[in-house]
Image: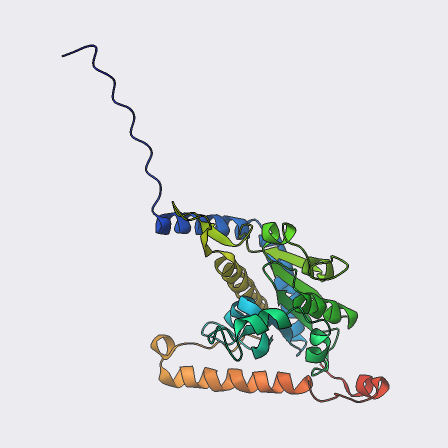
Length: 285
């Protein structure tokens, strides 16, 4: 053996495949959500209190934050007590360009005053609570939604991507962000820019994480609220698949859940336009 032969260079460490990299980063999102369990429990206390009072938790998100609104209600494993406020003009993405295109949606979510017009449709109560979702926390409509809720004495929970929000500029002239109008703030754990995976040869990252982190938060809250309602003697009517409970029971739950949603929603319209004194005398839990 030639002792003067060059020593082979160590093989470079193999980079993770993009899919493996993404899944690893999603595990990190789970860790981020886990550190927020005390705050999640506070949110669940608030939302359960609203539902037990016969009122509703109002949900709002523009853009892709709409996904988290619909993750909360209605879908299998979910239950009434939540009012999903989804404006199609702010979240109708599938046409992309042309009429109802994405350019218009992104423009409208920074039109000041739209939030007040949306909430003009509802007779809100301090017994209500609200969840407003915005990854950046910087667009005017979600910020003003939270501001309007607080002005009407409705406590607000915000879901943001904290790193991304802190690195982003608010579209409000005063620089305030969604978290400035929230009583409790939860973090999806997504990074600056949201996308989490770097691909060799591509100068911009891909594969966002805020929806994954947000869904972890939403369903953690949902599970905690269900536990509180059940412990209080008012177990929720959960939308459940027939494959799990049988077709008859699934239909029974489906009808009961939507009937309850309708009854709760009717309270939000009952006193619209009435003088404040009349409204207060007619209000009931």
